[in-house]
Length: 348
Image (cartoon, rainbow, N blue to C red; front, side, top):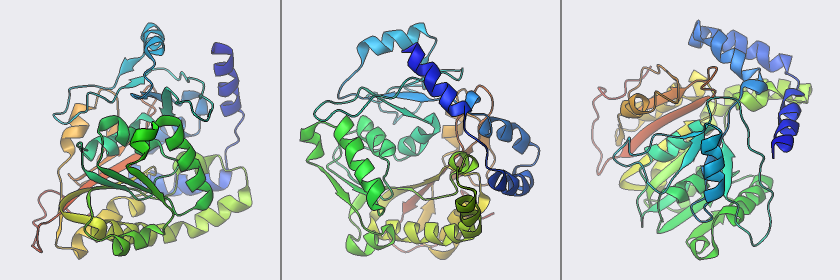
């Protein structure tokens, strides 16, 4: 296992930085994050510092692996720290850049763990999923957050939507690898444009997760095709309009009183706080939910940057806590049209 681990790490180190993207990020994030950017930058450009959470699959629990991880100094993300923290979800973290090898997909056999950026669990936890609820994962591929949702509770119905056909195949394989057949009977995978789901299924879901397409900071920094990277940077300004469109669709799909969590893996204010502010100022029936308690609870394992919004969090990576970037915002659909007061989440 350790030999395979070294090979994986060497592969990461061989990645080449994309100067076009780094120059753009330096220009933007030095303004938005100030002095904090230099610390975040050091981690993002150094894959040797990256860390990986090990999310256990409760449907194929790896008891022997659990003992091994404990001997190697791994610890669990704080359990019982939140009233709604699901006891059935267990994720192990290391404080050093240790990386387990990925398990290979084998038809008919469930994988025992899923490697992920541990900050990806925070949007799932913020959703507070309960047994029997109807859930929409609007932009579901590659499937990590869908798998995490299913570690938390048994939904009555889970719709995993992914517009991109190739990524949709990846999503289906992920679900097949982690979820037993009886539970897959309550899961549906669709390939609709996420902006159309709300019209197709209005007021249907108790909970909606919008893990939106974004400037994936870690991935973009290591773009192998400089021409593609340049095109991405040019098209980046179009992303907020797409993200707002996805959120408006998600709100339509949400039943009155339902909860919505929006997340991205970028530091970009235009794709994070500004998108949420646009929704809040344009829809009086959407109520911001204070999630500052999550930051207080998980400060031991994650570093949070201020967002000027109590309904949102921004996880930033630093050495020894190399999780993120991850932006999370939590909203509630009102029971009826009403004015909202800006105390909980003021627009930036």
